[in-house]
Image (cartoon, rainbow, N blue to C red; front, side, top):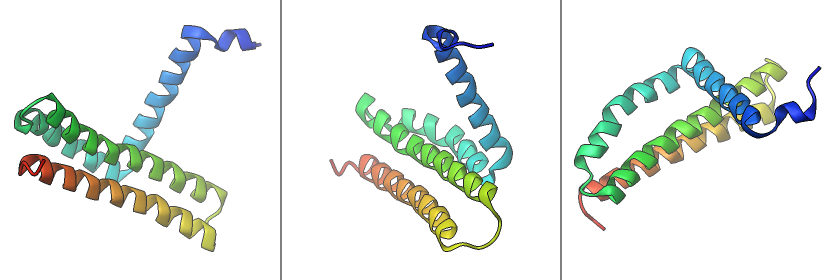
Length: 123
């Protein structure tokens, strides 16, 4: 039987990392949008390293895109929980899914604005 002392220190960190990797794998396996965004990452991240004139620009370009991936993961989690609770239509379920989707949209707009500003040197 596991005790609280079994989930401390490095062991807890290793378990947490395992859960995180499981989540990434599940999102990649079950979410088309996440797979598409990961594929786009394979293009955008090297492009950000090449086009950014310094470390700050490179970081802004990459971080703005990573926010899209983060919000896609959160949105996928919301959708999974809502679907788990029930498949019948409910106003709050629809709202939760719509708000999660809106978060992804805002992250995409953010990435587009950052890339536009950095690459056209509006700073």
